[in-house]
Length: 309
Image 1 (cartoon, one colour):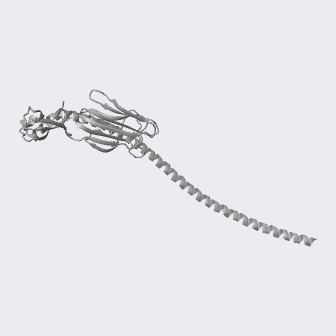
Image 2 (cartoon, helix red, strand yellow):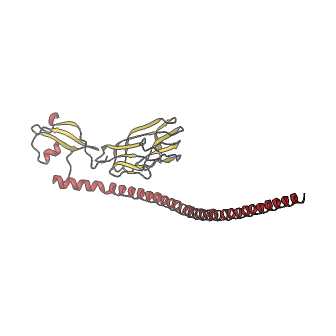
Image 3 (spheres, helix red, strand yellow):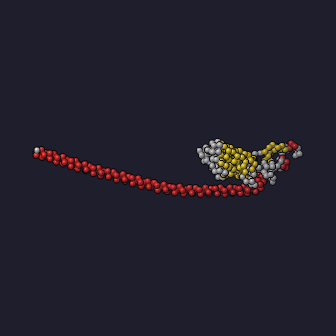
């Protein structure tokens, strides 16, 4: 029995020794694993710190951009105010120029006629032409009440003869052409304001101010105007208005429509020099956002009053 106990004791010692070795190995491996995990954790934290620093820089940049955008918005608003003031000054200067031309235009016209004809007066009839030395029969231009007229003169007959002068008709004579075609880029929704036009196809004579949308008649005569447009997502209404030296803005015509439909205005008006025309937006939104040029405002001098009444 004592021998058995010694054997068992030896086995027990061997088992304990083996367990101790195994336990020692396991602890070393765990320590090594912990060291590896710690290194990895440090790497992750370093990456996170770098990312955090990058994000902080981005936030700071965004803050700087917001400040720059605010400054740009303020500058744009100031520029808009300056543009409006400049447009108002240009309109006043244009009116003054037209008034000056109206005062001196008649004397200049007579001086130019004298230079061209070598006479002191424009002929008003075949009798005047005969007195000026014309002897060959034919068609001639003479001075009418307001416009240049065409007559046929038969100088072989006496002045008292009814066939001595035959009236043919009015001559389409203009001292200078006046016509324009204006369009918009971008929707417009400012209620009860004149519609501005930021795209000019033509503006011969410079009578249309695109910033204010106001046409200032440079000379007396008959003018044709037309406007067409498209409403946005609500009912829209516009008016063609006129202003003279004695009467403020008043309505000539009106057009309105339901959402995404067209409206149009046309008129032929007898204007004096300095009279004004505009298209005013009453309510709704005018659609020009897609660059399709739905809005079109055109004007044309049809007949000019070359001579005063």
